Image 1 (cartoon, rainbow, N blue to C red):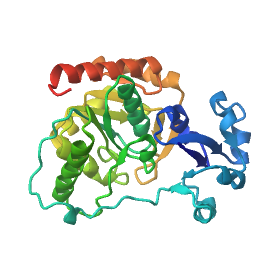
Image 2 (tube, one colour):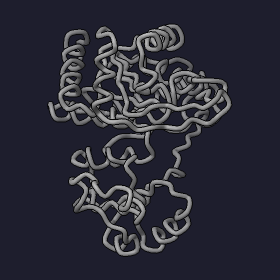
Image 3 (cartoon, rainbow, N blue to C red):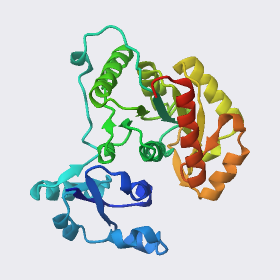
Image 4 (cartoon, rainbow, N blue to C red):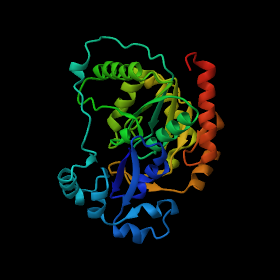
Length: 328
């Protein structure tokens, strides 16, 4: 029997939990607990969520089995206390999976991953990488493929994914060896048809302040798995042919990969100055579609919010893997 899951406090940033609730594994999305100010600001909210909305967390916690806490600091102490008091499973961003890389493996070389592997990365944070990962999972599973997936969110396991562990301050070469063995272990256990690996953070620095660890996660994971297909998600306002060409050149020289598909997110990156923190502006699907039409077709641009576009991409990827990789 599936566990009843509530999301608190729910905001539009977590729409993907509704969009892909049908592929949750072991959980049913029971309630979206919102603030009263959310209801005031979203009077014309999506009809799909009307029956799921609630403003009474104290009531809903008694009826649920698990809580996905979205990280609002003003209610954090209360959520942690009540979850523990009532014995509820809690998904919380502080539940970071930290692994001792040094003690995990004594191997001194990587081994080839024989299963078709897809890497999902982003130009930066908030580029809908997880939406993209869910889109791929839904598409492949629907066509009968067994998918082994490593997600970028702390609640990835809700969707049947594994989590990419935090390797701490381990050296880059140790991270590569560890991640290669870690992923190979799951492949041996699960025997999947396809592996999808989400890469945390951003692909490369955006400016001196937003350095994104200089793309170290992307370097480590790409070297560990050597993906057969790579998808990069872009901010809508930075998705222009010249920038994509520059990113592709960086990916080839620094990561040793080609960018096979360009995903356009519903997010614009706003940076007021070189030393300011970024802001993120959400835009509508029509603007995203318009952007896709402006990009050179050789980059194969698409949006996970476009039902027709995402179906085409899933089929293209499957055809590409079937034609070029013997084991699929």
